[in-house]
Length: 77
View 1 (cartoon, rainbow, N blue to C red):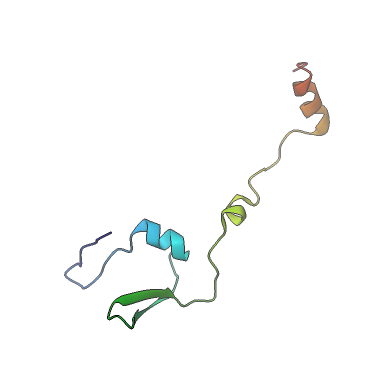
View 2: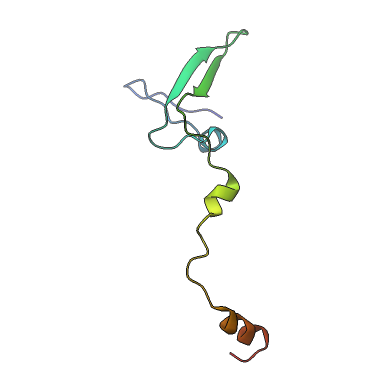
């Protein structure tokens, strides 16, 4: 993946990298130098990346009650 440096020295972190590290707006990151001379991007804030299961939490909302579900499964609705 490559990105372009702006006149202000800014770059956009590619989405796959942001997703992998759990980087969201407001996240803090640090740049370091690896032993092989490469640059390493590390997330430094305390928030842990959101898991795929946590992203689904609270999605069910106010659904059907048991009687309505049973009516649907019986073909009564």
